[in-house]
Amino acid sequence: GESLGDLAAAGITDAEDKLLVDDLLATMHSTGADFTITFRTLMVLDVAEAETEACERVLARLLPTLAAPQDMAQAIKSNMPVEQLQMMLMLAHENPAVLQQIGVSMETLLSEMRAVKRRKALMEQPAAEKSDKDRVIWIAWLKRYYLRRQKEARETTSPELVEEAKAASGKAMRESNPHTVLRNHVAQAAIERAETGDYSLVRRA
Image (tube, rainbow, N blue to C red; front, side, top):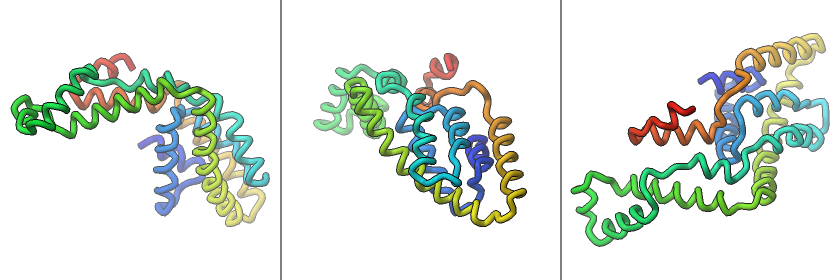
């Protein structure tokens, strides 16, 4: 969609880079990153700098904007109380046919349980611990992105072309990203609720 196009504007255009893009989106989701802030911050990465300095410059801007673990936890909603979920799982273990009778699949129950466990883990996670883990996750991706941009820079030998490409990339990035967007972990929560027929988060978003 548009977000992948935005990233293409930042220098990722080849089909072989799909994994890099997919990993970026997964990293954003797992760390509670904002789409617009992330894409704009990637513009700061300068391959003229050494890898460590370039990546640290991006991290210095990006890490403070990531969602707190408790905020991410609040975006994870369960469609049934924990007690009811545990009871249904126990019934399903004793008599799997019960689920079919009440129209609930084991996959749904397990999905709900994963959401409950994820929410609990985030609620109990210290902010400093999340920040440390986020740094490790992001630095790994940024190093890959740095090498990709460095390769692209080597292939562009004319200084005029370099400046022209940099200006075009920045302009495309700014124009294709709205100033205000949903944090992706909130959007994902709304989508998951809508799939079960609950559109309350979609309307609220």
